[in-house]
Each structure stands twice: as structure tokens, then as C-alpha cells.
Image 1 (cartoon, rainbow, N blue to C red):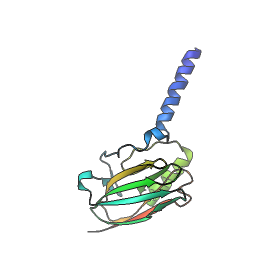
Image 2: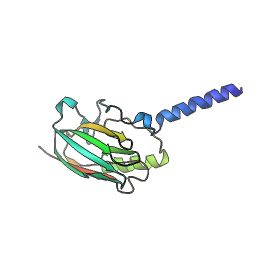
Image 3: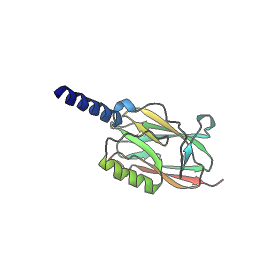
Image 4: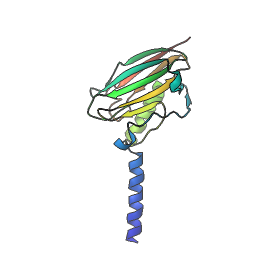
Length: 161
């Protein structure tokens, strides 16, 4: 009976580790699964119209913290974490990001793998390829607990064609 309990506990620990914000899941290739959202869709890397480099800072800021694009543009967002702690960049509407940030407070080890999210360990890089196919005002943020609340948020203005 004891060996069964140990085996089940070990399996649960392995499963939890696979879902955590651990270093094994970060810095991988971008997820290019086709996803359609209110703020755009997965971009085709062969149709990138512009590359934007974004720095993630431990001062809980993005540099730059504002991007303007035209409707239909496909951006390669290259994110570089120049800090000493894990950061992420998640694109979304203000409402979605606020809701997700609240969820992250309750489940801080939750793993993400959406094409509009990039996790970046300290000193590493990652990227998102995203097509902004609808005009409007959107945001990007780090939703790691405490980062969003400290102001690690940027804006994306998508101008109509």
C-alpha cells in the first residue's frame, strides 16, 4: 500500500512540474497553432511585415511600452529578458488581461502555451508572431503575480487600413 501511495504522489509531482512556470518550458519555439481572438490571430512567420524588439526589465516595465501597427500587419515580437527573474509577455484586451492576472494570483504556477504568450527566463529571448487583423486598442502585459500590478503593461494601437 505504501508503494502505491508513493507512486501516486510521484506521478502528481511530475504532472505539477510539467504545468509550472519552470525553466524547462521556457525559451522554446513559438507556438504557431492557429488561434483567432478579438485582438488578432496567429501570424505566419513567412509573412512578417515588421519586427519589434521588446526588452523586459526587472523594474516591471517593457521597453518600448507602446506599439502602433496597421490592421493586417503581422509582427514578430522579439522579447528579451534583461532582468534576473522570469517575465512573460501576453497580448490581449484590457479585460482579458485583468481577468487572467487575477487567475494567476490564485494559480501562480499555471503554464501557458498560447501563440499570443511568450515566457522568458532571465537573460533569455523568445518571440511571438501575431497578425493584428482588427483595429482597436489592445495591451500586452506580464501576468506573473505582482508584475502586472506593478505596471508591467504596454499598449498596442491597431490603426485601420
